[in-house]
Amino acid sequence: MRDDRTYATVIAFFAAGLYLALIVAAFGLVSLATDTEVVADPAMGPLVGPVMVGAATLMLLVFLIVLGTRVPADRQRVSPGVALGVGVACYAVYAAAGAVAGSLADPGGPLRYVLFAFAQLGGWPAITAGIAAFVVTLLFQLVLVGRFRQRGRPRWPWERDDDE
Image 1 (tube, rainbow, N blue to C red):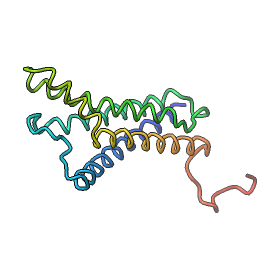
Image 2: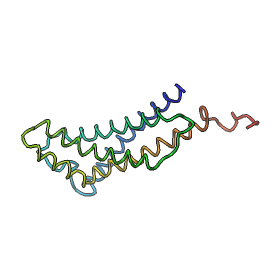
Image 3: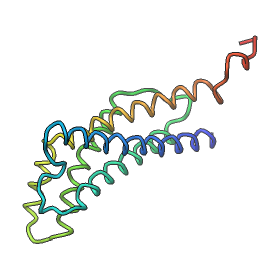
Image 4: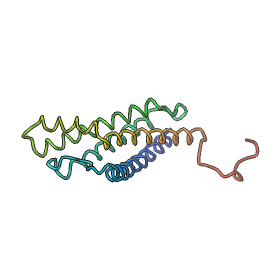
C-alpha cells in the first residue's frame, strides 16, 4: 500500500508540472490570439499573474495528492465529476488569489480587488486555468487506473508469462 501512495504522489507532482507548463503555453497563445494581456490592469503589479498561476497549481497539486493517496489502489477510477470539481476549484482559486495578492500589495481599496477577481472570472486566462486543471486531473486518474490495474511496471510482450 505504501508503494501505491508514493507512486501516486510522484505522479501528482509530475501532473502539477504538466499543468504549469500547459498554463504558461496556453496563456501565451491566448494572449497572442486575442491581443490582450493576461492581467489587463497594469496597476495590479507584476507579481499578481505569477501568484494566481502558483495558487492554482498548488490547489491542483493538493487535490491530486489527496485523490491519489486517500483512495485505495483497487478503487481508483476515472471520474469526470471529480475532475470537473477540481477544474472549478482551480478556476476559483486563480481569481481569488489575484484579489488577495493585489490587496496585500496595496491594502487601500479592497473593493477594487474584489472587482478585479470578478473580472478575472470572465476572462480567458481563468477559464483556461480551469479547463487545463480538468484535463490534467483526468489524465492523472487515467495514469493511476492504468498502473494499479496492471499491478507493477509495464512489461514488453516478450517479458510476459505465457500463463496469463
